[in-house]
Length: 291
Image (cartoon, rainbow, N blue to C red; front, top):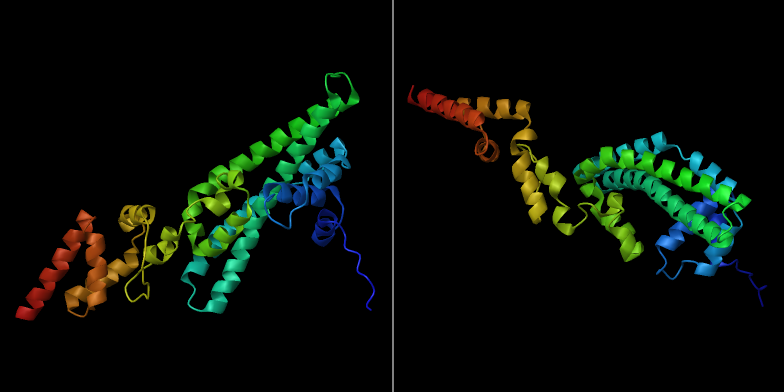
């Protein structure tokens, strides 16, 4: 018979797989399992409590201070950009490459959420242990940890505020985002905007629709109400003026395709100046025809 395999407890194994029992890794793994408590692979509450109690308050404060918020912002920005590229990729392999990169960037933000979840849990344990003894060394540790958590939350909130407004660009990896969102406990999902915002199936084709230029291959089969509103609101803002000028010239010369005519007409319907230019181009075509 083969030798028996001794399996590590779920949490210990996850920490080992994530890089080893250093405070930053312990916080990420514990926080992740607390946020995904309903998954079969998640650790039991007593396991995460044991691991968190093994961390001193100073160690948690140091781990929070080590979070590079500038790097997190860069990762999120890259995720937004790569998601857009994934939506417009022509080949499956190309899409996979961009989607993988985008999800890696979103995972960086999610790790911060897990770290903060675990740090708050450690603070709760510390305050529970100290009870009413507010003059104890533990009380000083609790205050320092509370301040560190608040500081990190403020820094990450600034990043969220600057990038959450671009969440529509994340719709290019909606399938992957929904898969990650489903792993989280229900109460966690709404606040995790990097996975949740605009992740409905009705938004899946939004970027393709917004990028539908003359000669493009976009085929929008389903758009939800929010996506339809975005299409209407961006008809002028996202208009490619170079493409519009080219289409108008081709209409004036009588060389425009039916697709180009339909595209320019869609934008002209919500832009008076473009409608006027289209009328001139069409009149020019008529005059040329009469000559």
